[in-house]
Length: 257
Image (cartoon, rainbow, N blue to C red; front, side):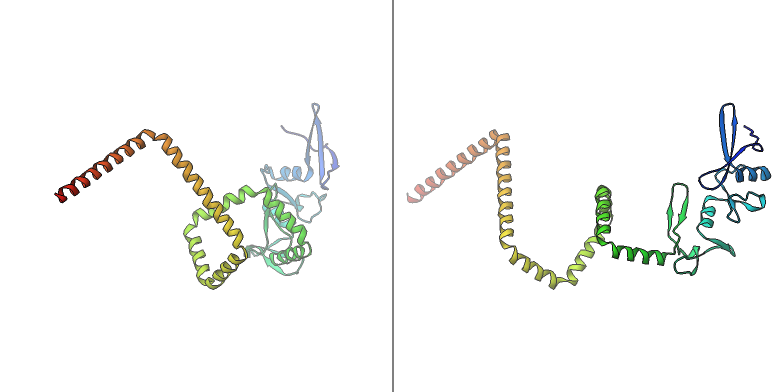
C-alpha cells in the first residue's frame, strides 16, 4: 500500500525520533521520518537493516546524515565503537585504553534484537565484578544459591553427561590425586575413624542387619515359589544318606566275618 507521508502528522516518540502518522479509512499508519527519507532517496526496503544518524542527532533527517547499517553494526556504533582501517575499535570508558574488537577485548551478550557488547573492556569488567563480589558477599552467595536451586535439574543433567563422557579421565584424576596425597588420605581416614567410631559401627551393624533381612526375605520367597522342588531334593538327599549308611553297615559286617 502506497502512503503519502508528505502531509503526515509529526510527533516525537518516546525515543526522541520524529514519528509520522497518517489516518486512512479509519486506520492509523505510523513510521519514523528518517526511514521514509532513506527509502524515498534509495528506493529500497530496509528488510531488517537500521537507518543510522551519522551525527547522532535524531531530528536531523537529511539524507546526507543517514546511513544504512546492519543491526550489529548499528549496535556497535551506539556502544562507542568506530571503524579504522577495516577494524572496529573503542576507547574503554573505564581505563581509557584504545582496544580492537577482533582481539576479543569486550564481552558479547545477546539482547532481544541482536548481539551487543558490554561498554567496558574485559579486564575492567572482571575488576568491577571482583570488587562487587567482595563488597556484596552475602548477596552474591544468596543469588548464586537461588540460581542453582532454580536450575538444579539442568546442572544435575550436565554433571551426569560430563561424567558419562569422561569416565576414564575422572578415574585417572581420582587415582592420581590419591597417589599424590596418599599420606594425607590415610591420616585423614584414621582420624575420621577414631572420631566417628561409634557412628561407623552403628552404620555397619545397620547395614549387616538390613542385608541379613533382605537375604532371609529372598530365601523365604524362593522357598515359597519352589516348595515342591525343594521337598523332592530333600527326600532324595535323605534316601541317598540312608542307602549310604546301609552300605557302610553291610561292609562292616562282612569285614567282621
